[in-house]
Image (cartoon, rainbow, N blue to C red; front, side, top):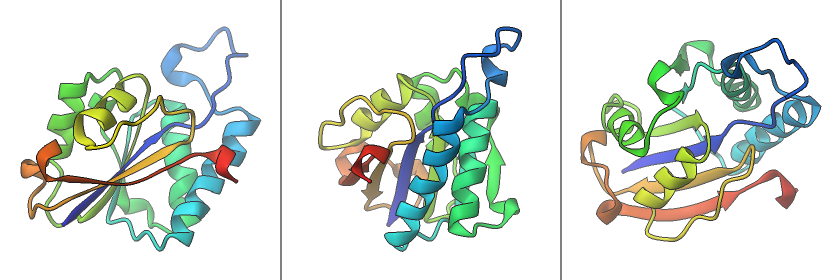
Length: 163
């Protein structure tokens, strides 16, 4: 069994005109909501084997705050450059290439692709994912390479407004 958590990065700031898109930091709300969602995962007894993130500052900051809330050691947080500006097929290739030793993985990325990807894999319809939201899917497979919708179970969709 493989478990995939898909998380949209926390709310970012648009008040830095001189920064490019990849450099935008989290705003105050984002800095509050990312650890809140990490704590929500901890309360569900989530035990991540790996956390992968886009290299964008807002995504990587979200990932770091969630990792901290879960007590995840830094070596279990990896940046995958291809997550930034990925298409749905790119995200599928990234997930299918995850190490099989990792059974529970959180991927932090960007919308609209992340919502589209969740809907590609989920047997249930996923609404547009707001910032800091998390979708959990479980797959009855032994290897990530075998992940697809036919082997998927929808477990939950959680967002900061639930708290």
